[in-house]
Image (cartoon, rainbow, N blue to C red; front, top):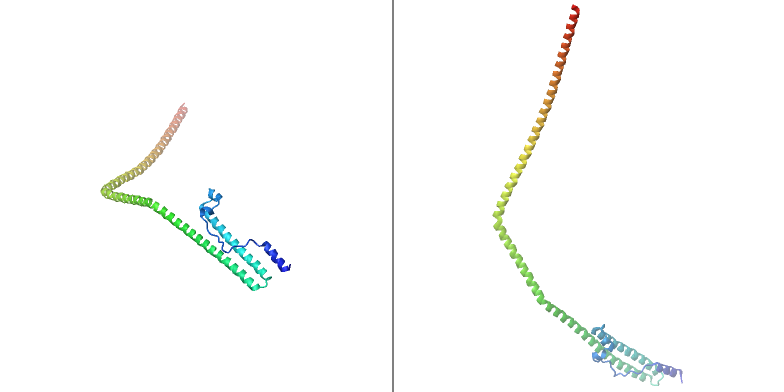
Length: 251
């Protein structure tokens, strides 16, 4: 066995099972695609399960593509040990292209399904939002009606208050005039009280001055009286002494 044959035999020993070009990865029903664990799981949503399903299909297509390329490489290598090399390479290339086209068809189908699913999800989200919007329409209408009624009631109260203010204007003016007069009378009373206070203070000061003057006059009068009395006593004492002296002389 030549080295080329040995290499070919070793390559064939490592080659995966041949791929049937007519075999395609088609989308089975969703119920069959979901695993029992995923179907029974309470934590994985249907969207997550469907996404995992698409990922498994894409992985299978990637595996088929890798196997197809690998088998083409092996067959092309073996062709160089064949007498009709070009013919062998052409058959290997045709088989590889046929398988690649089948994979491509499955890839396009998968892409279409995923686009359709995304469009379906968008439509569902749009429908859900529209349903939520429609469900809130009655409440919004009720709120708008309540807001309008509250606004109208506020406007009505404001208008009524304005009418009442206009009607009460003469009474308020009279009350203001009476208040002003009362304030003026009160201010006059304060001014009069202040004036009387000033006058009383002046009178008290004058009385105190007159009292002090009287006290000074009385003290001066007493001093003068005491001085006259002392002078009279002195003169009386001198007269008594002179009389005594004369009597002594006559003896």
